[in-house]
Amino acid sequence: MSQESRSKGWRAKLNRSTENSFIGRDLQLQASRGALSTLHERRTTSIFSISGQGGIGKTTLLKQFRKITEELGQVAAYVDEGSQTNLVDNVPEALSRLASDLEKQGIELKKFQERYRV
Image 1 (cartoon, rainbow, N blue to C red):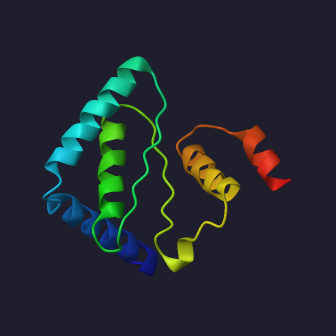
Image 2 (tube, rainbow, N blue to C red):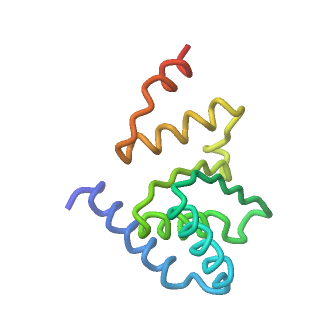
């Protein structure tokens, strides 16, 4: 087994463990599921912003929101700038990261990416 395969397997186990131990946020998840369902019915785009102290579960909550969105058949993208290796210096850079995330899911944003490169 290659190092990459072991790494992917380990990450998958960690993600499943995180999902199974995600407790204390039932109200937020119910509210987001309701809001996302309503947006899905209305075919509306929405932006959520989560901020707060480090270590309180913001990234885990975002992953749960993304999972709910995917369960509803929608596309979700997010920018996580919480670590030193993920810092976002400006709005265009944040938009580029969102565009890249959307492109990985099959949504082409060629014009935006061309303009961003310029």
